Image 1 (cartoon, helix red, strand yellow):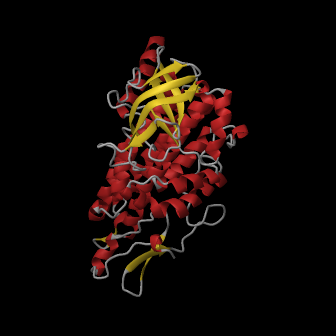
Image 2 (cartoon, rainbow, N blue to C red):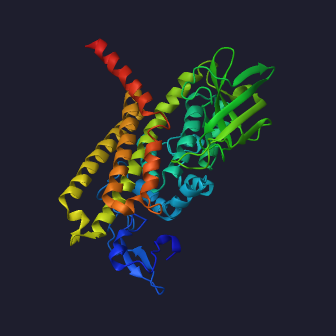
Image 3 (tube, rainbow, N blue to C red):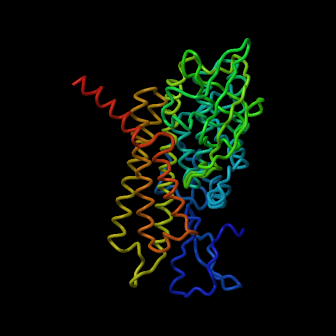
Length: 437
């Protein structure tokens, strides 16, 4: 057994307090044992699922919303490659490039792309399922897939055939991409930008700076919004272009979704071929909003994964922890906590996969995506906080996973479309409906 498969407990800790340390690898059924140095270690237990469920990872509570084989393949990867490194990725604010490239080999980085571009051409429910499972292991790893998905969605939906042929096949091979919209002076308002682009003969020339860009520390290609004479437009910018540079700003680090510090992307007389304009000049805002509607559904899947991770970790603690002569899970008040959380997580999952179906059918996408992300992100935050309460002092410990769950969940109430922006989108749907009554 590798050292990262168990938790070390100080050997001088009194026996009565050792129950406060349930296993960190919460998605396993884990038993305790004492090693030769009298340290308490956690090891994989005997209670494993039989049949088609993958080893040690039961499907009984969180039934796959797509094919069991697809989900089990991702769960297996999460168990062996992501969970052991999740705390380190978060603590050190690392971009997990090797894991991202291995996910590409697994087929997770181009799930919905057409087969002619190396994708699997599966429905968006499969993309959501992958994000949910990966988010359960590490939301920081999952958000790496979100920025890749945003870039490829923009290119696949609006890009010219030459752009598609040039870039889309690279995603299946592990291309790392970033979606660079934000500027320091504008935030979520992308209608007018300080980054400018103009034509110079057979090239576009870009100047400006993007701020707080997720995945930008390791991105090999950026999808960038810039202002032209006609309006906001979208460009694909390879990192190796002359004049492209990145740096870590003073406020680059966040307390959640830590997949490497956010960076500023500086563009100084960056020259691009004319076909690196994505879609129509001046239509960038509409293209960006459409892309965000797609990615918000996947983000909602990540929030469900975070909620599931917190739920499972707290349930293992409550199952194993004894207080007042009985297991914590046997107290009715604790059971009600879990019942409430289960109902809300189930409701969030239903909303998320309904939004995925809406993407496949191109039906009421804005409403479904906005509702899914709004509800799932708030449920994740609520569940993470409740799980801290269930675990008491252990829930507040720095070396327990609940702080990470809470920080990731709360950050996703803001990132990728804040709750307020999503409520505005839903309110427009309501007003439109009111006019029809």
